[in-house]
Length: 229
Image (tube, one colour):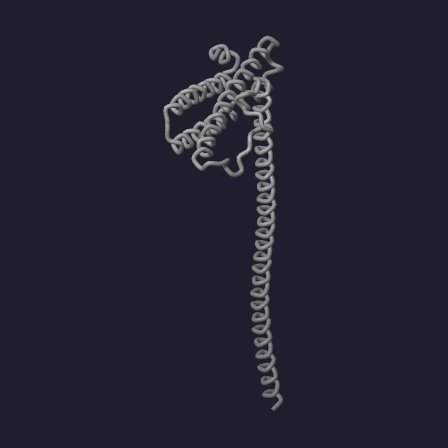
């Protein structure tokens, strides 16, 4: 099946291979779990397996998106194969989710026996229906529900990122406008300084010319007085 998926789309084939690797790791992980007797170690093992299941769920959603993108480019038979493959992935993942919940319940029951009463805050999932007793359709529906919740969380994160980018863009634009305004003010101050300097030079030149004219006038007046006398 993996080779046929790769023949349809290399990207789908790569995702399929990653999911298959996680399923093998989950299978080995649960086999290892059954050999662990200590409750604390069992809890840590379940946490590790839960992380792998989250990654697997993300990859299945990615696989589903790629399948939807290919719906208009492949034939109905190919679409059927891809959708059946996706449903098979969801079913297998949900079987591990149910197994994880069953083991978690067993650990909780051990704690109840240890302390002689029910653990505070413990509730059964799905209104008392244990995952281990769900039908395949219920497991698939539950898996789709978890995927939808993940999608909603991703959309909320994307919205926050989009709003942050918008605020950053507006701030950058405001800073650019302020920088340009400061640049214009500096240029205007330079122009005013230059004008004042030129005016000062012009006043000095006019003063020098006036002094020369006064000197010439005084010399001429002195000359006339000398002639008259």
